[in-house]
Amino acid sequence: MPLAPTAERLAQAVAQLDAEMIDTLGAFVAARSPSGAEQPAADFFEARLQQLGLDCERIVLDSRQLRDSPLFSCPCDPDGGRHNLLARHLPRQSGGRSVLFNGHLDVVPTGPEALWSAPPFEPRVQDGWLYGRGAGDMKGGLVCALMAFQALRLLRLQPAGVVGFNAVLDEENTGNGTLATVHALQNTLARARLSDFDAVIIPEPFAETLMAAQVGVSWLTVTLTGRPAHVAYMGQGLNPIEAAYELMADLKRLEAEWNAPQNRHPAFKDVAHPINFNLGRIEGGEWNSSVPCTCTLGLRCSYYPGTEPDAAVALISERLRARARELNPALQVEIRTQGHRSPGCVYDLDHPAMQALAQAHRTVNGRDPERLACTATTDGRHFRLMTDIPVTNYGPLARDIHGIDEAVSLASMRRVTLTLAHYLVDWCGVEAL
Ligand SMILES: [Zn+2]
Image 1 (tube, rainbow, N blue to C red):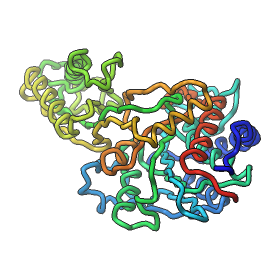
Image 2: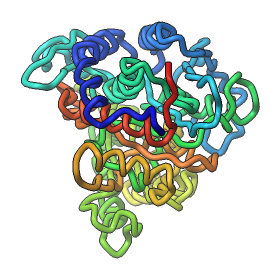
Image 3: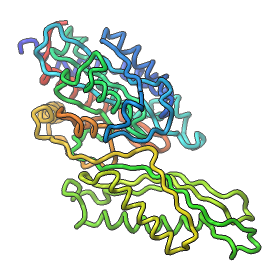
Image 4: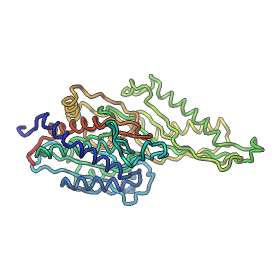
């Protein structure tokens, strides 16, 4: 490859893009995009990709088409005409290998804005970190991929293979966004084809590690119905909120069982607490002086690769029902699954496409990337479980994702950008612009 730039020139190109990287991420974060209303971020990213002259298409979310897929999750929001953005750089001469960068546009709720040091959608840079909701999870990673591509442009080069950008909705609650694109690619519903891509990289913010495995995640909505009464005669009532404490305490015992070293999946043997059951929402009661009628719990539970979501949900549900019966047979338990219904998976990091990513990391950092067994789910599962395309997650260092004062490390973004630029050069090859 006589055209391939030296490591020094590539590093210079990335350094030259520094202000643009920060400005782009700032504007991207300011384009608010909670799950279910991602349009501002989709529009922003689409405009950026069009500026680069990429072939852009919108993949419209249509849950009816996805309903029969094993990876379909019950939606949390109406489809509402929302769409992913799938853009492709097409080389002049085909022949180079190709890669798809897949990332999500949606962000989780901010929590009380008063707890933030500055408003969460007014991004700011301080001490080498860019703050704002979505800065780390995961607009920063998408910007790294974009800047890696632009770095080649600065050198009057472009990848010799197809480079795709798939920016999706609904990652944080269902994964149906990426599912929609994979479904469209598989069923020739898009101009792009699955065969366009030889590798998938998801730049989620896991501190420049290569993801080796991820847990499965399911959401359960549990409604407990008791018996209301005047508190003067509390003994006549049945308090579902108080029952909820007991049910949660028992679920934490189940969580501890699944985390016990002898019960861990081999990929998670060195992870201290791989399985997390989170009580993320609770709602119930009507009046301080009334024994409440109902209590509704929003749970996020995880399980190991190899466990089907429906099997995990069945085990958890049975545990909840059994404890409820013990407490009081009159306590009614209704369990619905809406949101994540995601199996875990183990990635093939020995595949040449993933080895090439590890090599690019070594070139930039002088050492092997660490491998991560991830205690969260990512959209990597769709490619791993539905296609033969090698995939992993590799993105920048972030902190307080899903928390207060979320931020992404700019130094880490620079390294990830450079690593991805090396990857484009080495994996796809380059041609003159
Ligand atoms: Zn994420």
